[in-house]
Image 1 (cartoon, rainbow, N blue to C red):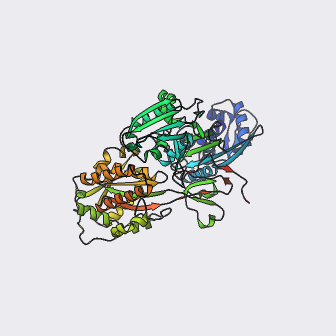
Image 2: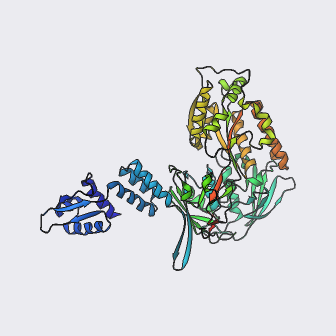
Image 3: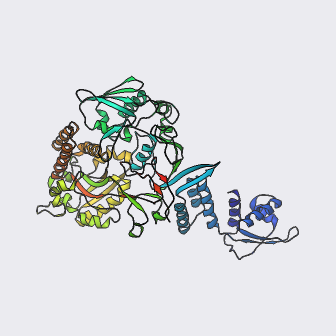
Length: 591
């Protein structure tokens, strides 16, 4: 690295010199450029020559001018330096160096292509010991790995590798199964449970997990600010009692059939009280859990996980996982570079050489209408016109790639499509919005491109939209409630009932009082209903009620796939459609 920086001093001194051009220079002049003695200059030139960077044709005698040819252009060396920094896991330094060196767009593109090739599966041997590792690119920024404060699915996925919850939900049957708790018993009135925790489960720092940690974890999320994910679930906790080191009792204020599934989520992950209380900020960056992998490095860009050898469900096959956050990285031809790719649709020419797992979850994007604002949308006729004015067919055409189809329901298209047939048909009694009036659409940064597309489509229908982009945490607060329209998405996965309940609870705050009370009563009936089928029917009833009042507009849905190379074995997906690192291993690739 130091040698490269010294060569850059030469290049900066003669920036326009071409490879065939001989620069006449003395050792004393070079010593001044390199800030060293003439003797050291000779050694440096010899080393640079062996690297193929330059040619040095010395003329004997003090003060004689020798010939120097600089063979390597500054930009090429800058890219090599950036590559060297990446190999040292200094990703931020690599990008900073490219910026400082003024590398061209073409040079940056070449570096990113090289960076793409750097990812994938690797095996290393040391002292006859094999180490299997995999390096993933992640096109999002990881802001927090504290289970209580994660906002994105990428964060939740990493949290699920590091932490465990009391129970887990089996994907196929939607059955609640034991996890950190090996058994539980309900109270007679259905308003509480006694959990019996496994003995000998160790946190990554070596201390045994106890019922006190479980109680602390749940009490901690109860103290979170309002409107955090699943707030309605832990708000219902009336009392948490530690019976002994391995027995915990949770009492609710009312019966809630969704509370047990809630305890399977990453939000309810069990954390070590001593570590969290010692330094909450450090815990969010270097979390300590009991899961199959432990965090050993996190510099904000590179997150390194190492297998937990004492995991209670058995050690992972992989030894090491590196997740590199590259939010600006292009998605050019990823199939030639990574063994596992999330959220991708395979081109036809790749279908025979790669395997695919269809992700269970659906992402549904939608608009909600704020009828409490004293503006145009307080008028039901205007809401109806705004409902029907957007051409969703054009929306689908404009959104190429992984969009599958129009969305008609969160729960089931077949069950409720008949209620939504008027979406793309203009009614006879449209009420035009005053041309001087503008509606405000509020959303978060990941959905900005959708918001701009909607604005264009609404302009064609005579409706002007202004767009407000908020950070996720601010979007959860009061500011969004001043907007007319809210653009958002929900991931319908293993936790679909929880996510829909959370969505509707958040919508209560911008529905008119009569509609809000109706939805609230229906949500209460869902939480007290033991039958999954009847709960599903009531979710459909809420959809129809909201659409009938023009408070909810479905846009589109997408269902993505995870593609993986045939050398990858043991693929299984979590509820968010991400590969569970614990289960994967690598065999010999096919020819």
